[in-house]
Length: 131
Image (cartoon, rainbow, N blue to C red; front, side):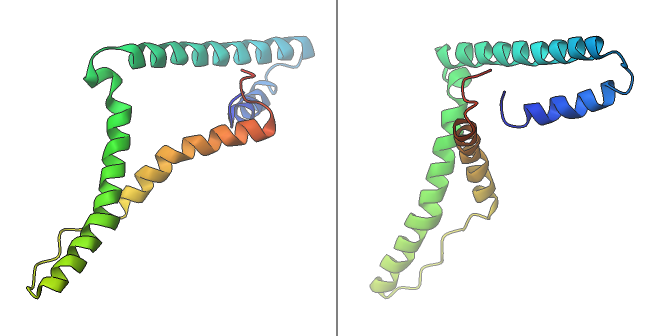
């Protein structure tokens, strides 16, 4: 299963097991819980595939748009602004510093790239593709 799902199942079953004393019924409850989570994951994969195949840029392009916005903002903040300040300092004129972006840009970037980290974690643990 995906990162954290087994923990979630364990916590839910810890609660359910207090109310189901029979081991056979507990095993059935665990099986049903895992089955419902796998079917939800499969349904989400189908939605993601249909969304990515949609010809409309407003449906299929929102994830790349967020990625390009984040990349563009990083380029602006850490390449364009410093280079502009450096270039204008050579001109001898006092140009105002361009507006800066705040640190929430890093939160967005790490959030987007963090999903790749979770996938790497799955691969290292040997559970990638086993759901």
